[in-house]
Length: 379
Image (cartoon, rainbow, N blue to C red; front, top):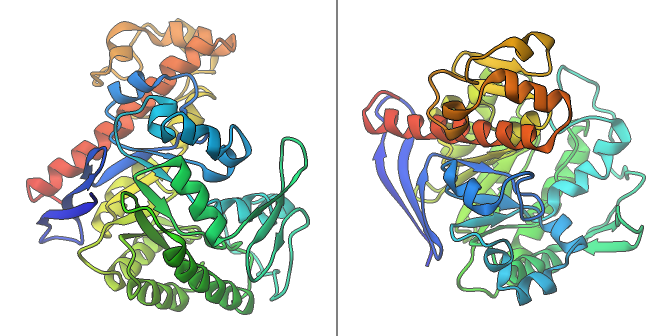
């Protein structure tokens, strides 16, 4: 059973308080979604991930397809049984790997440009290591070089075997360097693939989200939202290129949210630094995922109520305060900056574990604070 209930709408912004009901429990929204790429968050087990307040995780279809393979996961009871996770799960479609293993790798850029750059990708351009066709995408396995193929039908088939509660339509995630003609062809392809995903889906227990595309071209974003909004998806996701500043991020999320069905949930893909939480909620986002808390933790960067701390810096070795004196997580109650800093500087896994636990607790607490502000009419 999948259902989205809006409990309260803000009178000050597009923010809304809601609940997503899934076969594995509820998700109170707005909600932060930690990224468990291969069915795990590095250094933490499933109980610890739950202890930090996580309501739902998102896993990566492409990487799970490569290893251990969706058939093995299915035999283990799907992702929930495989990773011993009792709460809701999402899986992406593999669409982001179209970009990250293709033009992203070719140009050495992320999905969001740091500043204005020339649109160098023309219609018909192809990345070196990925072949994008009208019907699907050919990859090379990063493990053994074997050729892999993903299409709308193949992606949905894999995700149904993985068994997540919420799955995503297969799309072409375009490069931010794509010009308008390339983006137009890509958008038409994504819309066609969206219809094929709806036709391919057979599971009654899984919710299928469509993915809005259009890059930095606002008129295409709006067109895509209208086109997909008219299709019978259970919810909608959008991510990719959000511009060069927070003002642009807010405008794009707001514009897309306004065009999507108001009674269905919206997921913001790959965006979710602490400074983004209020922007996403105020703009109409319901759930959002980001690798920031775990990625940064393993590199010694701690998120706190007073800003970021880089525990790799020498002076933290003599700092006996908790990571964040105002934080109530078990790590801040128990350990000091000097201990965790020393572990991280020595590349000890325990240091990465403690940092990851705290950062995830902090991000989930931020999301809970956003929900509280909407409930109290403050946002």
